[in-house]
Length: 130
Image (cartoon, rainbow, N blue to C red; front, side):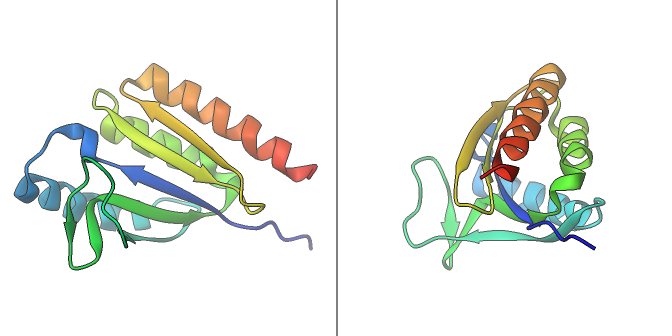
């Protein structure tokens, strides 16, 4: 049986314009739901050494950034979940392939999530030949 390497997807919620308390509530609600999505191996807050512009940090963790480790075969499921959850809200995504390449995506509508998913799938398909 051939195994594929998992990919990392960083989700930035800092574009939502929430204050610290609202952001903490949003992340607190999202994290357990995200962990239940098919293909998500792990999910948690991003550890930061330097807080990115616009992000909020607390105790070495970024309140507005989540990192997931997922099976690339389930990218459509994960993007579908995010599109359903944030279909009309702006979020940024960074997809990191096993070979270290990164793809930066932004979406703020269901159509943009669908397009971002297509871009992610093409990006990952191009990784397989590397």
